[in-house]
Image 1 (cartoon, rainbow, N blue to C red):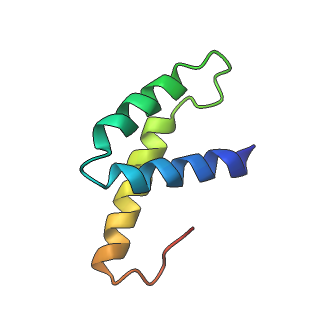
Image 2: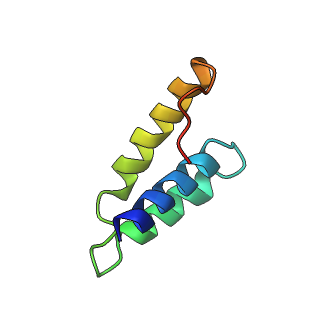
Amino acid sequence: MKQHLDHMTNHIAKLAMMPAWIDEMRRWTKELEANESGFYKGLGLKVAERIKSLKEQEKDGGSNERT
């Protein structure tokens, strides 16, 4: 399950970095966080951290990119 959450975090973060997708990714993240199962609780913070990490990697030339 952690692998799925990591995949979703990475997927949403990469799309959210594209201006055309940011609003949709915000909406989708809020929808997932509201899921009754609680599985996605905290997803927004994880996505924000991943975006920060991706931006730092871009500044450093992308040498440590995670997939």
